Image (cartoon, rainbow, N blue to C red; front, side, top):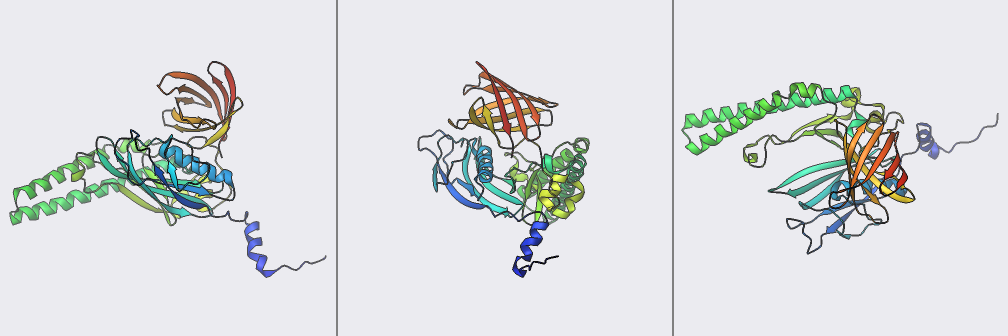
Length: 376
């Protein structure tokens, strides 16, 4: 048999190819500054609003991520190309006073963008949110796809126990401080403050303890997830509302979870994207950028589904790029959506079948048009 020499320099590439394919090129993330209209009625005056823009050798992959981020943050499609100063025409900035971001992970499997923002309604306050993407396809990661039902319950119970531990520790800490304060005969104001904090944290603890049965029956997470370079982070929102926030010494409760510790709780797709094991894919359409046509017109859609089967979302005709609100119900493999106009009035009905990475059916308005959309 004839033998062919192998260059030693090519061995690492051959090993990678045999193991399942060469690693994808890293995504490039640049920062854009969003510029609101000076006369726009956006509520509070905006400070710096920064937004990431992704580029890649595969433009369709970058477009999936960009559209997902812009729909989530501004209910708008992403610009086709990066503009360092981006006019906010068509962006929903209501209540957003400022926003910065950082890249928490960017490698061959995952891209994670972490946002710190200030939101304003009756009051203004800061908050954080993160979005993660499968860099093979541009799919937004949804815990519904990553964790088994048993995994959702197990990790929800773990967070439930952690919240109880944190609040009990906080109560004990304040009780110790109160005892010392009384012994020193501190001012009444100091003692009253500690008593208020103890009462508040006891109420939070009682509220958490009362959630036990609900947590054991969970089908999805109430917590936020962030998938960073070294670990995953699961975060439960704080107990306090704005009025009682000054008494909330605990704030949000987070669990840092090494990826390997998640193994028993992951689906095959979860293991593929979080642990790099296997080549499993996901067929979920929820929370994904869906692309297709209504009749002959190209459209982009994103839908979210709740545990009760209710669905809400938005879609855009690529030509007009204006958001059209959707709401409805999913049952079995059927999806019935109502399209509403800018004034909230019914405008059309979408009757669709849900398949693997696929929606297809009819748009029924003044006429009936075939429609079909696909997820990455």
